[in-house]
Every structure is written in C-alpha cells, then in structure tokens.
Amino acid sequence: MRFVAKQPKEGINVSDTHPLVEASALVAGLAAIFAVIALLLVFLIEVALYFVSAEDEANLFAGWLPDDLTTVSHTDDRLLETQLLVDRLAGYWPEISYKFRVEIDDSEQANAMALPGGLIIVTQGLLDQVESENELAFVLGHELGHFKNRDHLRALGRGVVLSVFFAVVTGNDVAGIGIKAADLTLRGFSRQQETNADEFGLAIVHSEYGHVNEAWRLFERWKVVDNSFIDLVTYLSTHPESGDRIEDMRAHAEREGWKTEGEITPLHW
Ligand SMILES: [Zn+2]
Image 1 (spheres, helix red, strand yellow):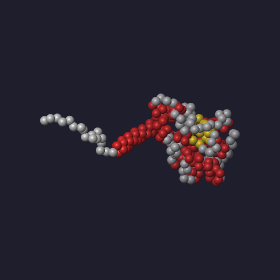
Image 2: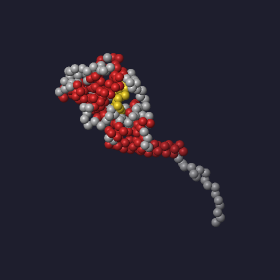
Image 3: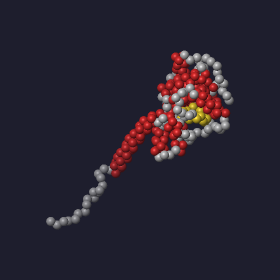
Image 4: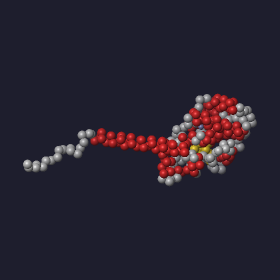
C-alpha cells in the first residue's frame, strides 16, 4: 500500500469551544482558587490573632501610627493631661498588658479609637466637647474596655490583616506598610462589644471617682443639641449605638450599687 501524505485537517489544534468561553472558564477557576486561599488565610490569621498576646501585639505595633493621622503638637497640654489620665485609669486594670500611648488627631469631629498596640486616638473635636474630667474618663475607660476584650483586633479589616501577615512573614516593619485608621475600624463593633466596653468604662470611672456622676453626660448633650449631631454620627461610626445606651448605663450603675451623684472633677486645661 502506498503511503500518501495528507495535509492535516484545518483546525486540528483548535478546540471546539469558543476561545472567550475557555478564557473566562480559566479566569473563573483561578479567581475561585484565589478566593479560597484568601478565605483560608483570613481564617487562619483570625485564629492566629486570637493567640497573639498583647505583648506581641505591642511589640509588632511599637511606634506605629496610622498613615492618615495628623496629630496636634506634642507640646499641647491636652496631650499630656489625657495621657496622664489614661495611665491613672489603666491602673484600675490589674492584669493589664498594654502600655497605652495617646495621640490627639487634629480632626474637628468628635471621636475616640482603640488601635493596635495600645494606641488610643482622641480627636481635638472630642476634647473640645467634653466639659469635665469625668466625661473624658468615661470615653477613655470605654476605649480601655475595647482593649481588655481585644475588640480592636477583631475589628481589623481583612486587607489590614493580610498586610500585617505579609509584613510579619517578610520580616518587614508594620510601621512601613501604610495602614490607615479608617481601615482599622472598618468592621466596627457589635452591640455586645459596645455594651461590654461601656460597663468596663463605668467600672473604671467608679474606681477613680467613687461615683459615676456625669460619666455619660457627653452623650446626653449630643442627643439634645442639634449641632452636635455630626459628633454623634462620627462617634457612632466607630462605636455603634447599642439600644438605649444611656438607660443601659444607668441601669448597670444601679445594679452595681454605684452612686450617680458626686463631685465633678474639672479638666486641667
Ligand atoms: Zn466602643
């Protein structure tokens, strides 16, 4: 039999499936694989974060400040006074493992934040609004409550968790990866976390002053004064309202037998 060389058929190397369909199947497949890996990473990191001690956390974030933070001058009296007040209040938390650093954000909107490594940020707007040390002590005590329950770590956005993870694996400095305060408070807190932080803050205020008078006065003012609405909204963006917060605090103080009357300590500025 004589061999007759034939030309191969046209399109022998071309699949029957349209190239666009094949390409999108490939992209979808890859995306699914990456999504699974990312989810696994996030899950693993959340588990890992749970076991990261406050000391490790403080070391990792030592000297770190959010990228988007503009602080007031470090010679500002309010900074020193607020730091001293935090140190005094933290003294009522015996098993404390943070060394708190206070920074004042020059923002005019009232807010306070608990950030990784024991960093407490209060805004200039908040300091303008508090009328007594008792009011400020409660806001700070509430932030200490978030550290106590380590809510600030659970609130980390996934992007931040991944950035921190890669910084740790590659041996880089967390300070160099450019984390913004907005990313850190992305998820916000749950109602239960807020209630727990309120109760911890009240206990601290009670230990310091022997009563809880004016502890929640700032929030009462925000509720009635129209032009303070923006402050309430800003504050609520990082500390969501938990039902009737003021009523809950009053009821908690009553259950604990804490006095709601007592001498008010003026601010030192
Ligand atoms: Zn809060």
